[in-house]
Every structure is written in C-alpha cells, then in structure tokens.
Amino acid sequence: MDEMITKVKNGYSLNIYKDKLELSSAVFKFIESQIIHTLKKKERFKFCVSGGSTPKSVYHLLSNSDLSWDKIDIFLGDERCVDPNSELSNSLMLKNSLLKNFGSKAFFYEIFSDSKADDETIKNLFISKLLEKCGSTPPSFDLTLLGLGDDGHTASLFPYQKNNNVDDFVIFNEGKGLKRISLTPNVLSASSKIVFLVSGASKKIALERLLDEKEPPDRTPSKLIKSFNQISIFCDQESAKELEI
Image (cartoon, rainbow, N blue to C red):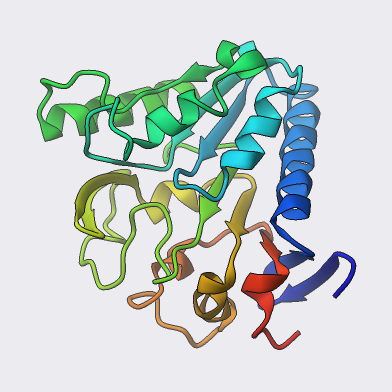
C-alpha cells in the first residue's frame, strides 16, 4: 500500500494512508474543504471535534488556515470531568492547537467553564447551547470528527456502559478511570457528515470490529454511530493491516 487506498465496506468509506503524516494532511484538507463548501451555502459551520492525541496535528494545520473562523461554532463530542487547566482536559488541548492562530476567532463552547456548577447544571447548559447554535432537535452538526479507542469506544461511549444509547443528548459516563461527559449517539448520528480518524497499530482490532456487520455495539460502542450518509474512516496503514479489503 504505497498510495492512498479507498474502499467501501459495510456502509463505511475507508481511506487508508501510508503514515500518520499523510493521514493528518488528508484529514486537514478534507475538513478545510467541508468548511469552505458549507459556508458558501450557510451562514455558520457547526463542527463537533474529538479530544485525545490523534487529531492534534490536524488541529494545528487547521489553525493555520485562513478560514472564516468567526463563522465556525466548535463543540467537543466529549470531555473529561477535570479542571479546564488540567493536562487531561480536551478543552486545554484544543486551546493549544485548533483555537490558536486564525482558529482563535472561532466560537468554542467550553463545557466546564464554571467549576462550581453541579452535574445537572453543566448538562443543561451544554444542551441549551447545542440547541441554540444548531437550531434542530436533535442538534445536528455539519461535521463530526470522532476518534476510535483501542477498546472500541468513541467520544465517551465505553464498552458495556448501560447509558451509552439512552434517549438523551448528553450523558455522564465512566471510562479509563475518569468521569466524563459525552454527546450521545442520538446527537452524533444526526451530523450531516461523520468522520472517524484512526491511527496506530493499537487500533487494528477496534477498526476491524467497527467494520464488522456482526459486531455487537455493547462491546464496540462506536457501532452505535449511524448515518443516512456514508460515514468516512480516515486511517493509516498501521491501523488497517489486519483488514480484509
């Protein structure tokens, strides 16, 4: 696989790149084009982003692109319930990557901006801002960028959690030893375009399971994300090694 390979498998569009550098560049260009194209037709671009380490290089590239950032609304798909200045905070990661340079002009909703608020208040404020910015029920983003954990989780929807697929917009969950807040499949699946970004050998099994029609969503919650439009997966060769394509 010396060049990018594109395959369609079980409703997913699979785009495989040589390494993480080429992968990050391709995802950056894809997101950039989505923003430019959408803002020709709509007044604002609603962007749901993922945390973690995998998308950081993509965010750095985006932040240096002279887009109409003042017309872009950014929400996190999930966040760890930690101080916003903690190294574990997805918000802090965004402030140090996507929300720098040109990207500093975007509107960003910080979930834990009020450290004294209780869980119910935080959840209700989150939902209220989603409804205000997205203007639909369930709230719908123009683009949602999701990660894929080596255990099959996405956002903070972790294996065998009973409330992963409740009929709500926002939930609190537990994962990898931390309390978290997350958008539900109800919201994530309503997005106009959904992209999974997958990188590294540790994701091979999770990616194989995501693409398996018979895989149960209890074990691989990323399977809970559905769409009327084709879901795109951007991945590198390391994560795609075991795939039958």
